[in-house]
Length: 252
Figure 1 (cartoon, one colour):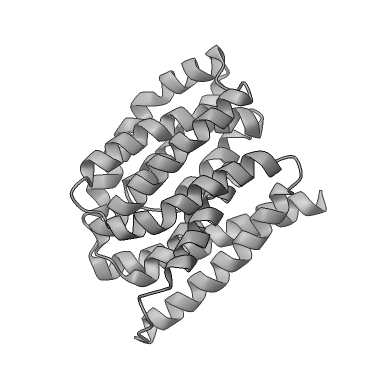
Figure 2 (cartoon, one colour):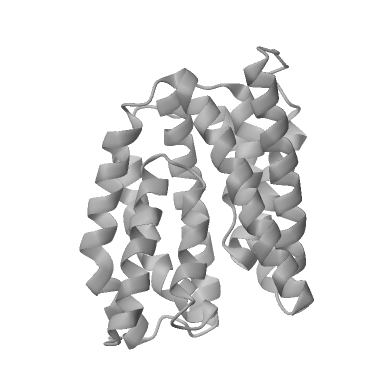
């Protein structure tokens, strides 16, 4: 197990952010791996957080088990499977920084445009073609594997549906629970589930569970209308973070 106290100074806030994201505040979890990567390598940071994410998924799915949209999952999950597979096969050939920059720009533009539409009460179609959802699912699986940023593509498809708050969170919980399990074989193949990484994950487990429970309680205090605005705001902010990370990586 990692014993460096500076690691835990970064890891504990990161895991809390992950828990809040799993509890319903979608998007902010993208900050977690970069925060932990201040003290260990990005690959090790991702390997430590994946078991925690899987446990947090269990808490989140259980809490929202009665509120989810099966049609959206049927459209997005097949694409996610191929997205994770493509991410694994193309990891050595694709610039992670380039993916982050492109995804960040799309997220910023989409989030700000939707916030403007919400402010001016502009109603747009809630039904995108099914193939759009499959592509967004594929992009989510791909970016989740490469850059741990699968949230924005999924949100870009799901948020315009204006599903009730709990249905959106429940659907997201099931989707990312499946995506995280799909990623497990790739991490095994890369030899990242070492004794040190797994024991460190175990030490952080109480924080992971507690923060997820807190997130599920807090999100239910936000009205559906405010939830929609909050999600678009988080999407735009996460987009700015991805733009910064991608640009910094390309210029380094």
